[in-house]
Length: 196
Image 1 (cartoon, rainbow, N blue to C red):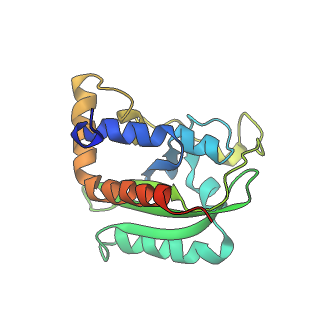
Image 2 (image 1 turned 60 degrees about the vertical axis):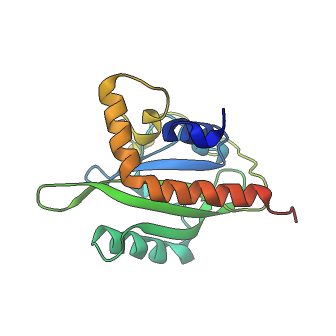
């Protein structure tokens, strides 16, 4: 079957299975983020199915890139930009810093208008292949330990699922379709560029 005629969720599931790109589901109110498991494994992080604190991931952004990344997120959350987009260096376990491109969008706000949930993508732009190593211990992470999220975005893409899951998947995909499309196009361009 031609990829263009497949449902969007199925195209996304296949793209995520390679680990070349990841999706993230950020719960601003809980200060937790859930990354797709293949992405976490690619970067050498243990417990790929678990949510992490936002602090855990912020600490992995290169210090010179952190303020620009956070400013871009604040501008989107505050309504100054229609979506969040940033390139920054992210420290992996075993491969050093990786240059990544991240895109995202607020998909839920509280009744007071505060951003509650963002969904986005992360694409590894680094020329060298990752060499993940288990650089973090398994088990509890003290203050970085968080409760699991209820049905993070990547789980919506796992299969056709029951009706409520399909409705939520379709709702979220409709809200972030343009940034997902841009990320898939960027990934396709990276795959076709000459090695070098």
